Amino acid sequence: MTIYDVAARAGVSIKSVSRVLNNEPNVSPSLRAKVEEAATSLGYRRSLSARSLAGASSSLIAVLVDADLTIEHWKSGRGSDYLGRLEFGALMEARQVDYHLMVELVDHNSADLERDLMALLNSIRPEGVILTPPNSDNAMVMDVLDAAGTPYARIGPEAAFDRGYCVEMDERRAAREMTAHLIALGHDRIGFVTGPIAYGASRRRLAGYRDAMAEAGLEVQANWVVEGDFTFRSGTVAMERLHEAAPEITAVFASNDDTALGVLHGAARLGLSVPADLSVAGFDDSPGAGFSTPDLTTIRQPVAEMAAAAAQRLIPPLRRLLAGDPNARVIVAHDLIARQSTAERPR
Image 1 (cartoon, helix red, strand yellow):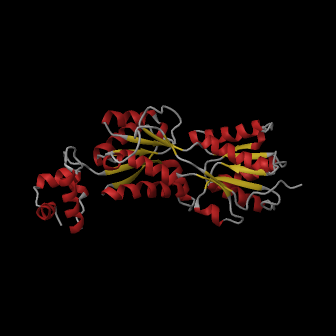
Image 2: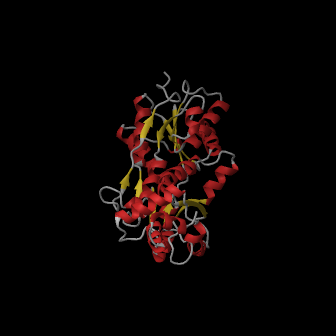
Image 3: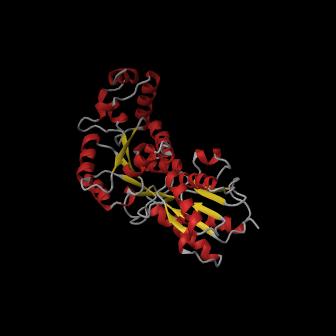
């Protein structure tokens, strides 16, 4: 089916159909309804290549993700649950209005970052860009997008909240709640495995852990905190380091679930029983958290919901439907999921 078939079925001109399909302003509701009904009845879908022509809407949203961490996850054979949930959340919104999603790896440490990003924008001409950490706090990335006039939504930004659309969860509060949960179980010697400190999320989660410990009057020892990199392997290594340097700890809180699953593996190799000898908690609520042995206590990070909120603000037809101020900073709620990997401190 072509645009000519849609025009014939709707009884309108080709130009009218084009205006509706490209979401142009000043289209009457009756004309929009007539064209959309005709397109739906014919099963018409617009050609992505045709939309990339000069003057046409691309109906394309790009998602920029960190190349280093994504490649590290795939090399480990574990993939990236974060990326999967992110894509799902944005895609479910985009498909409602016949938009497409494209995921691009971006090396935020590259000396050619500015050139590569400009080439990407010129090549695919996205109508909007979703930035994930650490790109969501990269000033150069935002400068390039601003210069190109490309709207963007930032997931989990750390600063400059006046730039782009900001969508996040309160990671510091969530980490404080999880640490407080472990303290309520009687644990007063709690180890913490961070993510890469270059990531704002890692710093916020570490701050939340320190907040809860301080509120409980507990002093964090230097050897209780170990830096990881959000991977399973780093969790196993961190558990070995913690056991050697701080054998007194009775609980470990890891900055994400992949790391926490690595901690579980490391504990088993050391002959420690979870949760009898050691409680372990994570952050994400990835699928693996529910299938591990024991299943993992964790913070449910609303990744899909944050991606959906970002897409809603970048896609014009969805943005028009938003209630309230579409430019407002969005805070998406999280949950603490208590499972079998945490228990009262051993006596």
